[in-house]
Amino acid sequence: MFADFMTRAVMQGIPLLYGSTGEILTEKSGHLNLGIPGIMYGGAMSGFIGAFIYENNTTDFRGWKAMLITVGFSILGSLLMGLIYCFLTVTLRANQNVAGLALTTFGVGFGNFFGGSLVRLSGSENASLRMIKTSEVFKRKPPIEWLPPVLSYGFFTYFAIIVAIVMAFVLRRTRIGLHLRAVGENPATADAAGINVNRYKYVATCVGSIIAGLGGLYYVMDYLEGSWSNDAFGDRGWLAIALVIFAIWRPLIAVFGSILFGGLCICHLYVSEISFIPKLSLAAQELIKMTPYVVTIIILILISLRRKRETQPPAHLGLPYFREER
Image 1: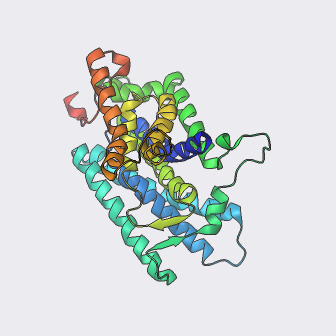
Image 2: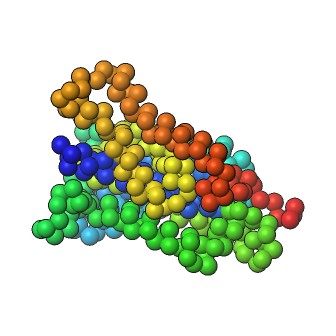
Image 3: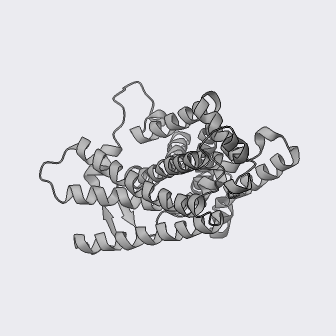
């Protein structure tokens, strides 16, 4: 039971890791992107559209082509949504909270509209649709016989961890990371030092959006085995944002936090299997599902009480930068 629980916890947590890693990068530039849930939803739908087009217009299915097309569509969709957010908040200096929430609404609407449209185009009598061939490509596991099942996943799982490790290194050990953190902490000082503030904000937000969008694609193509049904994504985008706070803006902590959050999301399915614990009621299950948010609130209170700079968000997070006021 434990091995099965850990496997599912990791698979539940990887979409959160993608989303939180992308949001950490965005927030390091001083932007609070509450559009991450919509970007993950839109990225998943964009990739699904690519898989649908390829599977229904080829008689010679190739795994590498399906992978390139699906991931390419997801990247393009996520990038477009990131650019919309940047144009509103960096160029037009719109309120970041409002712009992010609007982007979430747009992403969910975009996904549901095209999801319903693809179901009709396919002629399916069900409210869901599956891209089985493309999903099998995403779910391929490394051909390592000695690797135990609890450590054997599709390549997108390992890619999420690699992205988090690389980002941690870039943010802490490179000049680009230093400049990015300077932009998030004090953009006026960074601007005076010759750093192009707007460029860093655009690049960080767009790259962060792409990473988050890949999290949505992973959830649909790997965890749901290529299945799409409207509103099946749940609150994972918001959990990804909560994970950013839990990880205190550090990608490496987000790796372990994502597995913890993934486990908390599904633990209600396993608690009743313990012999001395009675079967949980529906209300008790819903209370357990709230655990990740409760843990996040506790962490937020603790880091606020400690008041250590290294555990605080970027000083200019959520604030627009007016160069003429420098």
